[in-house]
Image 1 (spheres, rainbow, N blue to C red):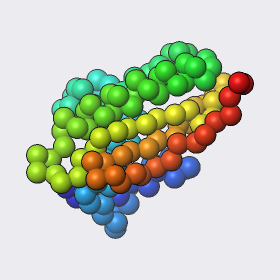
Image 2: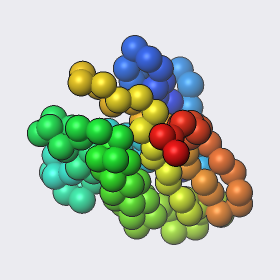
Image 3: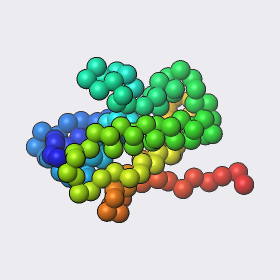
Image 4: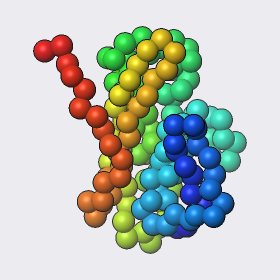
Length: 133
């Protein structure tokens, strides 16, 4: 699979019409788009997306426990959607998606994302957050 690159920088995602992504990086990019898409908003793929954004907008993420909970469900939704729509002949497939809240305040939630392939390729980062313990 091959597609146009999306730059997921701090200024928000932007389509790069010059750079292409291929192989597992296309899968990772599709996973990132899936995480940020509200489930049910795509008429072509009604199962695409997660409830992460909807939960946040509805006030359901009030602390790190709720953020971890919503992130875990979003990771599972993304993994399920991507693996059920991967190319049949792909030699490197998605086996794990990890989403973890990195920052949370009253106005935003920043989530770290990590995608792992069947060949051991790891793309992304998940921060180690301090705990109260």
